Amino acid sequence: MFTMRCNCIETLIKAGSDYVWLLVAIEPKEKMILGIRISIERSMLVAEQFIQSLIIKYGKHNISTDGGTWYPQACRFLNVEHHIHSSIEKSFIERTIQYIIGRTECFDDYFACTRINCKLEHIMNWLGLFVDTHNTQILVRQRIVK
Image (cartoon, rainbow, N blue to C red):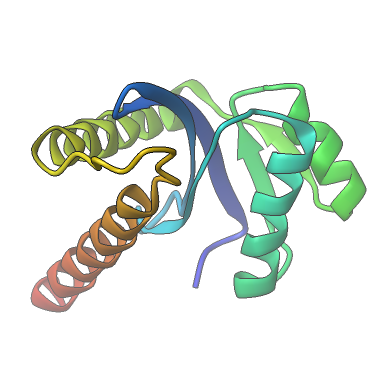
């Protein structure tokens, strides 16, 4: 499904009263979201698990990141080639991330979890729905253009 490279990035988002890390993998050519995950920490282990989930789903491909020290280590451990984003890729990725953050924080504002010790399942469910809708829109646009 994706070309020879996958762009991965993480960012901090506010969910309820907490901040969590949002990890996103984007296919650079078709702009499909390949994977998404939230985590309370940012580490090599989290990056490794995220990249491993992409490998299981799509096979081994080059990984391009923003240069966080945890990604090269995870890629070495998984025997995947690692690159740093170009400035053009970074610009596209940042726009996509801001789009995801805005929609997710808006969702959380309107449908905030009221459970004590929330495990943020409602956010992961929302993100899954968001990714499916985003990718479906891309596929529909591709069919219309052809």
